[in-house]
Amino acid sequence: MVPRTGVTVDICPRDVPIVLIGTAGGAFALWANAPAEIAIPVALLIVLDIRIRLTRRSL
Image 1 (spheres, helix red, strand yellow):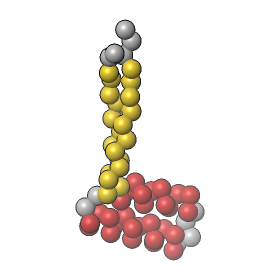
Image 2 (image 1 turned 180 degrees about the vertical axis):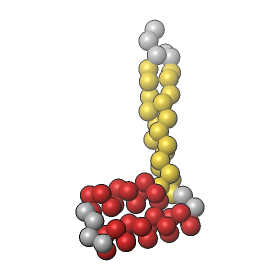
Image 3 (image 1 turned 90 degrees about the vertical axis):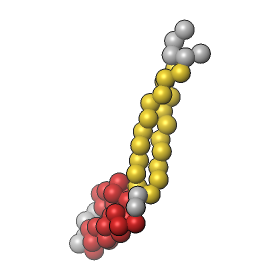
Image 4 (image 1 turned 60 degrees about the vertical axis):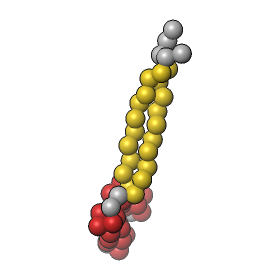
C-alpha cells in the first residue's frame, strides 16, 4: 500500500489590531502608487492567518 498525501489549507482572519495594521498598510501602499499586484497580496498575508497542512493517510 502507498500512503496518500493530502493538503489542507486553513484560512481565518487574525485579531482586530493586526487586521487594522494590514488594512492600513495596504491602503498606504496603494496611496503611494505601489502596484496593486504587490500591495494587495501582501496586505492579505498580513490580515489572514493561512496554514497549510500535509496529512498522510494509508488506505
